[in-house]
Amino acid sequence: MGAVMQILACFAPLRRRPAALLGVALLVFGAGAAAAAVLRVGTYKGQAGDYTSIQDAVDAASPGDWILIAPGDYHERADYTHASPNGDATGGVFITKPNLHLRGLDRNMVIIDGTKPGAPPCDTAPESQDLGPDVGGTPSGRNGIEVFEVDGVSIENLTACNFLTGSYGGGNQIWWNGGDGTGSVNLNGYHGGYLTATSTVFLGTDAPGAEYGIFASNVHGPGLIEHTYASNMRDASYYVGACPDCNTRLTDAHAENSALGYSGTNSGGHLIIEKSEWDENTCGISANSQNNDDAPSPQDGACPDNGKGPTGTHSCTIFRKNYIHDNNNPDVPRSGSAALGPVGTGMVLAGGRNDTVLGNKIKNQGAWGVLIVPFPDLDTPPPVAHCEGGRMDVLPGACWYDTFNQEVAGNKFTNVGFFGNVSNGDLADLSYPHTPGNCYHGNRDASHNVSSAPDAIQQSHKKCSGEQAGEDPLNSDLSTQVICATELLGPCPDMPGQHYPRTMQVQLKPLPPQRTMPHPCKGVPPNPWC
Image 1: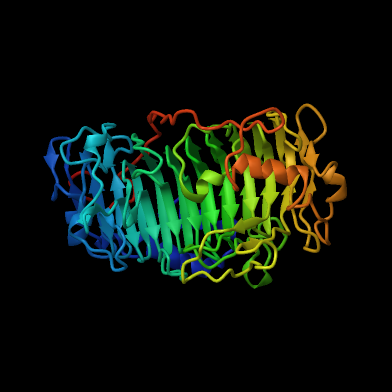
Image 2: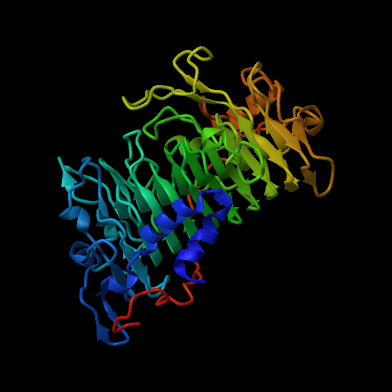
């Protein structure tokens, strides 16, 4: 199967028109691949390439070109010479040309390294960390590979590590940035495959740190992220957000040892998170509405133009066929709102609407399997955010996002709720009265009837329409437990009846070897290495 047909097959579940997909496929893979140049970086099998720096090759490339990278430890520093148009921290590799194809020849041995030049690969020593150019007396922070507001860029078969935050942001290992903080979407068509993103250093809760592993924001695809691994992030291993119609598919991902395995703030429309593994995080998967610079809110999985999604409903944001287990880990890096992720929870949908949670395996979760809650955003919003989709009449000073029209169906739960607090169990719903209800049906527990709060939720909330309130979000046992699990309003001591593990000592997970692309020369125009 050729590259164009492969990407068409990948996006078939999104129900996009073939003609539109063909146009994006040609955009991503290059309509005239035979005419594209191949710029080689490093030395492969004793044969030197054209460049020793990836950024030098990016700067020399034309749209549609390929950049082929030999095994090596690349301490790229484009952020020291290439200023960002919006003034934020830029990337060690900074891409502002459309339709480039960046591909390593070995996923484990091609390393985009955020440590200082001369340091060992992904070095753990604090003094080896490169915190970015000095701006006004403080380090600015760094991103790894950043694609800035250009379409059709693919990144494949490499590892990025140890890019940390600073006074101008940063901390993202691989980032398709379609307009961070602008409230607009300025990136179409992207692909990432056989990628690894991690950090080997934790400098402290209030110190610079690694925020996101594989990150797509302000995008409107088609986007495909496949065969990837991310770990040790203090926000999320994976993020797709700030996109009302993300038009993205994330598949065969593995997220470990982060505050959140997946985060999707203000995401929606055509978005599929599927066939992936989420474990050893504080919380496995989180999708939420928030009144922040990921504008516009809310998180809304409804199909655009009242269309129909893959399941035949009007929901186009689908979490399906994932393996979500053992997300009970408080000893991970955590910061910001990600630190509010309820420990011991497989999936939390907070203040979102119109999502579908279908056919997932959820195992060994101490608190809740699937938790659906409103989200009260108490932070001061930036100028770009205006509480769209939220309410200001529930809590003083808070943009309150109700949650409704969530469908949770056909999931299998095993050993969930073993923290033993009241309300802990397979399913839990905090939803405000007089809103369209959430619905639950066909879910199973391996050893007993499905446990839920409210009780027997699959009987009382089976129908996916009408007003079906959950537990009182302001005054109920479940709301008390959620506040304790998140520590939203302050510390909650660990004691009987409110047992949620707290951070003792942050531990980083060593990076295991990952499956590399089987044929890295496939599809690349002829060149001396292929």
